[in-house]
Image (cartoon, rainbow, N blue to C red; front, top):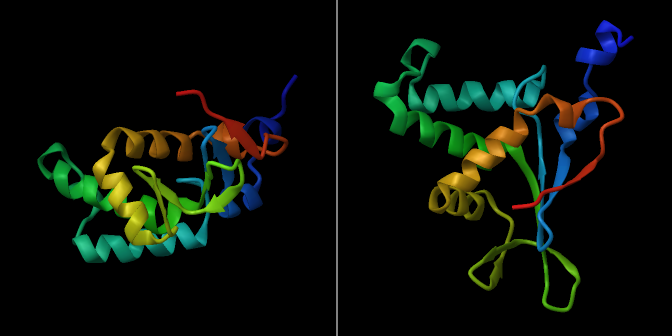
Length: 145
């Protein structure tokens, strides 16, 4: 029998520091979207003010603005690290943008997320998957795409 805390408890360190998604030729460390992270709440408040959004504004009529909001949240907070495998097989901090490894910066992450909306959707899905942030869950999760 699984108890309440075993079923719903999460590892606060994994939520705030992140878990690694290993895509083979690149790895991304993501933080949890949800839970009790004060840093997440800070970013949400900041972006709510920037976009002048309230919960009642988050409707289909505001889909473009909501997507900009969530994409910026992912770039600013959810993606904590990004590493790319070099042709020599070494891991290097940075993002592969069509064969060129660019620095891991918010602006470069934002560009990738804006260029690849399906990838953005995947990051949001993974960041909201509470099972990845449970105590005892793997710190590195292999992704097959």
